[in-house]
Length: 87
Image (cartoon, rainbow, N blue to C red; front, top):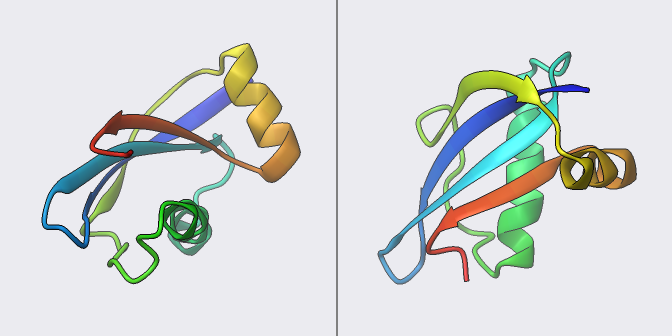
């Protein structure tokens, strides 16, 4: 499975920058859909009031999905790869 990687940086409530990738099937190109996935993730991290727009989230590249990514995409439509300050 080929997936699209959307590089995302969001300033958290405490002022630190949270860096994560939103990973979706490569055929999903609608930014509004990608941002919805990111907002679901932010809600789960108690950061739901933070801004998530094209300024914070940009398409980066396409790659082959790992088994973990593919399972998450099957279950909820996307996968989040936490990079920095996501705890």
